[in-house]
Image 1: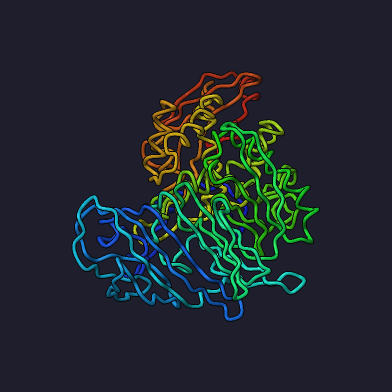
Image 2: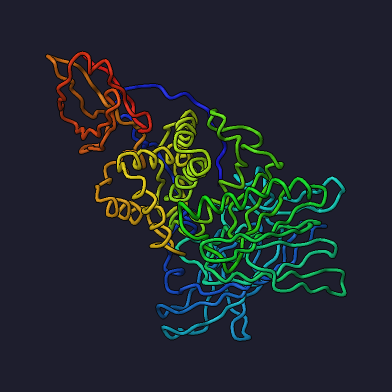
Length: 548
């Protein structure tokens, strides 16, 4: 998902790191803990399958339905947590034909099971629900349900709920650490409307009460916020992409008036898939296909059902976020939101505090797409151009176990951090191997920051732990200080975490050198003529300061 844009200048300042640490007062609530932690009432059972059945009633803005949850018992317990946010209500819970007792605590429901289940046994429970889900205020950033109409007055409805949580509209185990292995989504809508959700369409059933049910089957693990409902008078067209794992079906659902524009603009989907399979490996959900679905908001990375509202134009609503011109060569939503299929939907954070795993890599995917088609120089110009959007307001990593995400700098700063690490490795073939290896090693998994850090450092055979500390956990940008004394050029890192030792590229004329600065002064013998030819590799996201 793309955060709101903030345009600020980046100024060279030499502050001490401790002065830039983010340490304001934070007050987290009991509700935050219930939402953001792996509570004992979540930990004892392993989610296997959802069958979500929901009837969408546009006339009164209600959702009514049931979710049958299949799970495996890991520990013998009797109290289960299921999440559903106010004002939605759980009306009953049934297991083996028996109504179960439950209580509500904020946005969590605690269900009393009749007896201790046997460890290893697979069980099912069905949660019935109803209510008017939160209306999306500014989707996808402030999400919920968008109740809109197309220009002909037909209903145009969509869900979006990253951060806010899937439990804003359906009952689930609303924590990212545990995903169902598969899912069935059955959505009932008024006849004349079409629902598009994740996975593949299994069947459509028309009912005597003038409604239709669309059954979608997801064969891969799926994160909760990736589940979506999109409703409109859609027209459909399709294509096939010949990818690394064979034929991948491409399905497109758009409003009829936009068919011609979509048939042209959505050709970029195949270009995106070709570039990202090169960089990241095979598309992670061949079994479920790839879809682009028009919605009444900007768009989101819903797994195998990427939503689109970029008005059939290149850039981000017609703008280039980098200011270089390269961002107008391609459709931002097709590229960025689809990039999340690899980083968000394939590799998923366990805790939203580690949301950078989704957004930093996907922001960087924009540069990699540019590189694939326009060359590395264009790609570097793009990622560098995006630095003007960095705020350095607070750390990129948030607070754990309370559903707290870090700074929006996880986008542009995170992308520049990855580009910097690539340059420090100074081996583009190895860098591509790392990106593909991440998607293979953590295929369909939920992960922590530490796992990603360790993988990159181990594979690169370079300890990047201090680099990750600097860019993810602090707000200061490292400063390469330098000076010329007695026929020698001196340099060191300042404004950095203790032990920071990242390599740094320089050029002296046509010769490129990777320095190994530390916090202590080091020297490089240079003549005055050589010093005049010295330039710094601008692809490293650092500040440069000449000192006396």
